[in-house]
Image 1: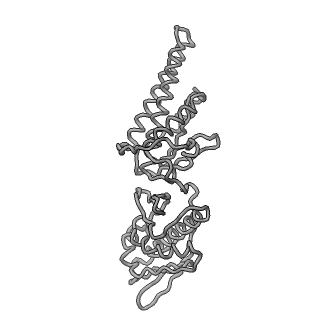
Image 2: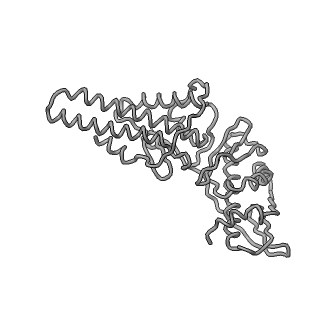
Length: 310
């Protein structure tokens, strides 16, 4: 009962319907459960949501089996048997709750999946977390194999993950402002220059310039880190996909369709600016000095400026 209570305190509360993705005809690949879980944050948001749906349903089955074992062992009306039956009923209710959560998964939340110190998968959706841990330690291997097998039949486990957003960089660049005849300009230490045409909403523009420049810097450092680890990065193919409400995006990095997941609240709303930055990102990957001039920053960032609370 103690283990059930521990897991129950970590129930995820907010979910939305699981989409019926077309099942890929992929065989289970030679990948361990822990390796799969470690890789998942490099998959798309939809793929991670599919993993959670699968994991919660198998976890529910595991709890139902444990409840059934307890009922089968409670053969008389002794106090011990009555307690076992009550415990089995509570386990079934929890299992039913897991199934309901799986069917109402909110795919607009930031979904992160990791391995904890006990080598168990931990799922985080928004601010809520849950451990994928069987109520019976002897069943943990069976649970993990079932989850991995179903997920890898649905998605190609050979492609994918090369970067975990849980370790995402959060560098803040320094920006300086100058005021010329043609209008104010914001320049970062890394050569990013945003040229505005008016002084209107200058305070908001300062914040937007700082945010956009810092996000570009973090993208550049992340890509460089991946390149140093042996990943193939093709700047011409970089593109932003699948923005969540919180600003997490999938960035495709090469022709194999491999991707990374990053939180880019401003750039995700300004894909044109991200595309203009690709030559600057290429130069950074090649260890060359680079400059990025955004001459139409007034127009390109106006929707960001309007969103800023001064």
